[in-house]
Length: 187
Image (tube, rainbow, N blue to C red; front, side):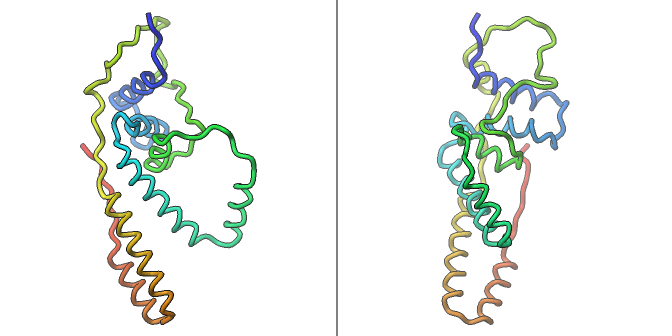
């Protein structure tokens, strides 16, 4: 009897949580685990992960530009403290951005709730048993968002360099009127 690998256990947890019907969509821990498995290189291509993380970085840039001086100082002080040697995987970074769930480094995939076995018997792991149960995710809009954001950033820099206040106000109002954000859950 072979013991399952950590990735096999994560796949089992994701499938079990998704199909259980006992979690709510607001259960962030479960959503983080499911998204972290789907964001692995086996399912999500590297290019799509790059677009998602690029959008995350652009949102962080907006956050940094809009924060107060005190908040910026606090953030810099926190960055100076020693950091743990472990780091999140790319899949965990994508999952954290997609779900908004902040977990420790690295993510804790210990079983909880419905994931804990009811009996003490251990079934042997079977390679490829999750094949066909987890589909490749569809990633839409991140590439276009990144491209549009970069274009907007270049335009704003050009306007700021011109120094005309009325032009800046009109341009910002035009940008505000054109921004449209929508989120949908696939079936």
